[in-house]
Image (cartoon, rainbow, N blue to C red; front, top):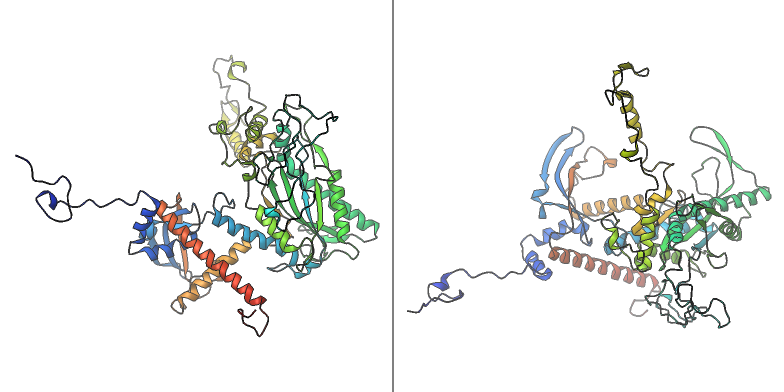
Length: 603
């Protein structure tokens, strides 16, 4: 007797088997399906508004905890809400990473802030006096010396209009005449010449002609000490300007220090801002803005013009002299007892100095320089083809190889040179205590604190000394400076920040972020209308009788979106918002450029 039941259930009822529930299709195994499920929920628009603060972030930070509405006058808690009642039971916060490879949205915000910060130091605004536009300023580029021949692309005469899409005919990479002793093969049997005319995106650019001839150890050590080289160069330039002021008869300025003492300083000083960039070969070089300022004895922090007679030529001479003069040797290392020499590259090619003009006219303008430096502030080691997080003893083997490619040898050099050079005496070699009771002595009283003890050292005083040691910095001055190479092996030895500036050069990132927060808070209140006029949510520094504070006790709950669909929806919404913002700016710029009395269409 054959069964009449269907093998699979159907949507229409026919027989006993067809009465079973139909299995719902599973859509959430793909990003599009997961996004569809999220979009069909009734709270979808509330979720979009909830994640708007971190909508464009690739890996937002999730926070969980409680939010308390507090009345400042009495401290009374008016309301309490836990993040479990919010969408996804968490509050999303943008990661704020500056690297475009990690998070394009946060990197774009960082780049825009960097542009405003750098340009304000050239033309003023945002708290910087507009008189800085009249100060002499120079756009300087300092590059590393040669550690061995690498493939490069040199164009002696550009005919293109856009350097980003340069298609000009380059010169041969490394040509050599047949009579040149350097022609032929290197000591390791590799060709020492290259007649290729490399294209801009050629992957061999920056790679050594011979990996064994290239000095990888010297390069990573140079990256490590490049910040100290820049610091000494800045000091040498300021000393040159101080001597120039003394020769011109300009007296020194008396200023009052924070301790109340009076000291005399030079009447002119540098206010720099620089960006570090890693070249394709893995060596760091600096793009810097050097602005010349004066000194006000009544207000040392004020930004004032330099003394009369100082021009941009004086600033160029000071920087060129400092770059050619400054050189030093690193401390001894077991692999190189005499240390490594640290200096800039060829004075004719390694240092490029160009005056900056304001007002949008000239070869190098303020907007051009600020945009150029802000672009490199969001980059890291992408030019070398290597991207990784901080390396450990377990992960360094995946990237370091003494016989590998160029980047692998640089990482191996960082790990090898940064190894501990001194170890404690092994237990087997330590002198033994042959006393009857090892570790103890006759009872004695500590002369410092009066503690009675049998231990060789007073436990009370030892604890106090240990607490003092714990309060000292992690890297004491007597520690080996090469130990930092292991910490920054993923950055090929460079451990400095990629955007630094002088204290008086311009504003800070924190000021720009606080201004953005205040604007968004004010914009939010405008959208609410008069609904919250009686009890506004304000920052702590704007307290009044009607202020209501929101106090949060939040803890870290995780990183990233819950699903790939959420990431797709959030990033799509943020991309559309950025596109509308860009179109709005372009339309506004078009309207401002339209002559008065005409329509945009007629213009």
